[in-house]
Length: 180
Image 1 (cartoon, rainbow, N blue to C red):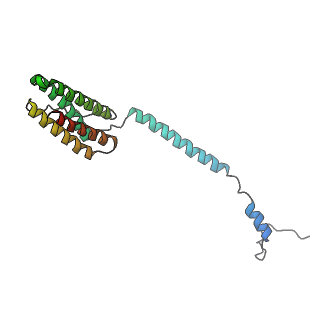
Image 2: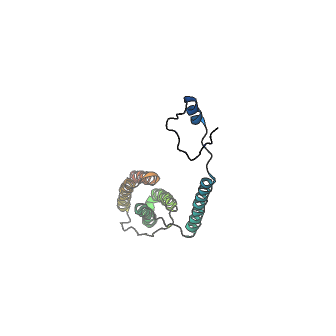
Image 3: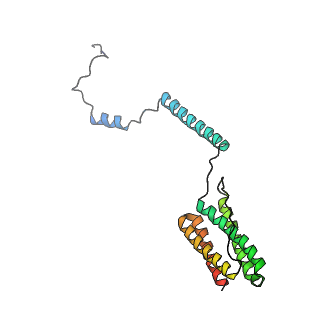
């Protein structure tokens, strides 16, 4: 029997039989190498450590989110309306019941807007008093302007903030009917 030389080139005329080809195709793939497993584990550990490190860094250096300026302006306007109605209550004792209802509504609006603003970590402060006549005509003018402003601001926002301002605009519109 002649010795087989393992370094000899393969005979190109040799072909695998269909059964041998099918057996070779049905054979499961070899298991992953130890190098591949350890490399993948290392990358996963590095990514996890990076995520934990970033999380720790972020808790010490929070991102400062500013609220939409429209929302801040709406809250400031509601607080100004409450202050205005406080002054109107002193000047219009005959309209006390209606003005108290309007004031309660505006306090509710201001509370809802303040609650929406608490989601933001940085709050600019802007509170400006309203300057309008403290008579029934002045109250109507202020309420009409508040309704129009809230409707316009609702159109500038999206989602729950837009819904909040749209409902405030609707409530302001009902105030005009109360003041007839």
